[in-house]
Image (cartoon, rainbow, N blue to C red; front, top):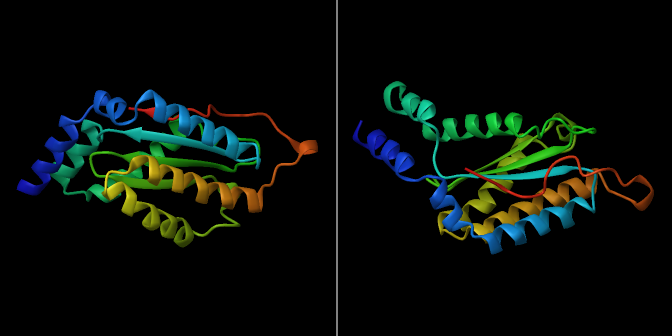
Length: 177
């Protein structure tokens, strides 16, 4: 119970100001440019979402119902995937890169158009490779690596060409909460 309480307090202690301090305007600009550059090479859409901590409703489930924080992080990433409308792309090939600062956890959520090309195990392998940078607090390195790996998947399966260039369906700038 004490560990669950510590986790809950850590999530409540951090807020959007911590996210904005960690991800200054320079870093946000670089990430936005990297997403835009990536999307010029494929028809997919990539969103980055960074949250300081989980909302109280998730933490309540962790504290009182003993739901593992890892499972709650995944549920939150799926929720943000829908909230940010990453699923709402023409070819169903959107990907959300979700980072939870309080846990230094990353989740990759892909739309159904990618299911035929990338297995859940492959996405998890990507997450594990990126986890080292996040655990060390090197968020830019980890997000850059995530963006490169996701871009490679999208370029190989949904390449963009000059005659098939589609619209930019989602904003390129990261979402900070």
